[in-house]
Structures are given as structure tokens and as C-alpha cells.
Length: 126
Image 1 (cartoon, rainbow, N blue to C red):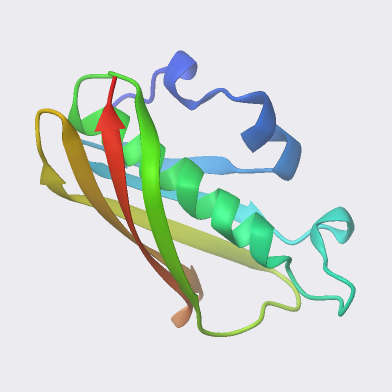
Image 2 (tube, rainbow, N blue to C red; image 1 turned 60 degrees about the vertical axis):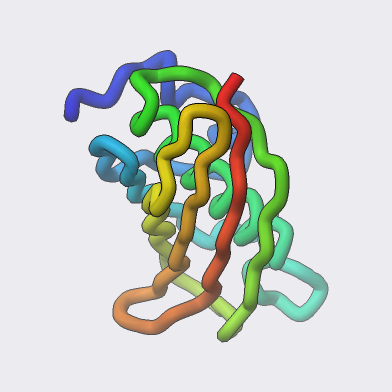
């Protein structure tokens, strides 16, 4: 799928450094490099940044599943599996239920082949 610029541009996603790698119908791959301003007090990638990456990726997956319609997060649950000290992470978000009014999306945040976080969310179609 050709990635429409309007779909992927967001001041917040740019602020934290998200890069859309792949966007297909109901699927989004978004990468993020660990930069100094994204670290928590322990020097690791901040959990809020990971959550934001997940939310951004899930939102893109939802929009691509419904022909660029906007959606909003109703709820999202995340499990943090391992800390990230350096390098890059990749979030893979996939719509698992593309309903007319709500969508259910799952996401994995990976560093290489290691699972960093797992999330499940529900989005409302606007």
C-alpha cells in the first residue's frame, strides 16, 4: 500500500521519532530509535514512549483497515516484557476485528527477535 502522507503525519509521532515502515490493510509496522530524551530515570526506553508507539501503530492499522477513516482509542492494555537500553524497536499492529463501529487491534513491540511489550486495544470508528 502506498503510505498517504496525511495518514502518517502527526506532530506527536514526529516528536518522539516514529517512522512508518510498512502500512497495509489492517496492518502497521512503526519503528522508533531510543534517543536520550526518550529515556526514563533508569536510562531505559520510557514505558510511556512504548505505549505511545503502540497507540500510534494501532491507530494507523485501524485507519488503513477502514479506508483512511479516523478512529480513537477506547481502551488499551499493555504488558511490558523487557527493558530497552539502546537501539531500535519495531511495533507491529494488526487489526483482528474490523467492525463497522469498533475495531480490536493487537500489537507486539520487538527489538530484533525479542518481545518487549504486548498490547490489545479497542478503537471506535469516527
